[in-house]
Image (cartoon, rainbow, N blue to C red; front, top):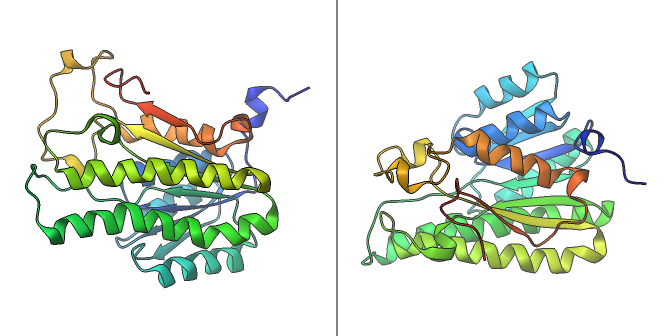
Length: 250
């Protein structure tokens, strides 16, 4: 008989690598995983000291890694260091991403940069974690897509929407190939979430959001925690909308 949900969300002793861990959704994911008993490695180009301090204050081991996810060798080295220092890697959450303002006309440089960070960076981290998870016959991978992957956007350019659409496809491909190895891969598609990434973007009126408010990073981090936990052990390849009701999913 399966354990009650309250038991299966406990992940004490597991180890997670969270990219984009210095702020916003990534930092919130680190906090919620630490609350669930997970030791956390926060990776970012920015300083992750505050994220590490938060995790340690919750009684967990934590590590800050300066890593550029667009550098495949750097992503692999970060994962190798985590496994060396912590002895395992159970969870990967790919939060690193960029979202510039824009319209339909976007320069080649910006197009390539957004795809490099959002798509290549996500893949490089999955590829680095993959052999460790295969060897352990277990792994939980969560990627961050966007409502824009499914219905486009107005304040952003097509490079962002298409990059997040690619993240959805990568997630499903990883889930299909991970199943035989007991590796799960799911994605969340946030709507409008208040972070530094979109601080200067125009937000929709609250009456356009059925739940009547802008989301915060914890609104994303808690569902991510579920997808990282044993409570989601029959969920893989899923796309979970987190949009306050603006987007209901496919």
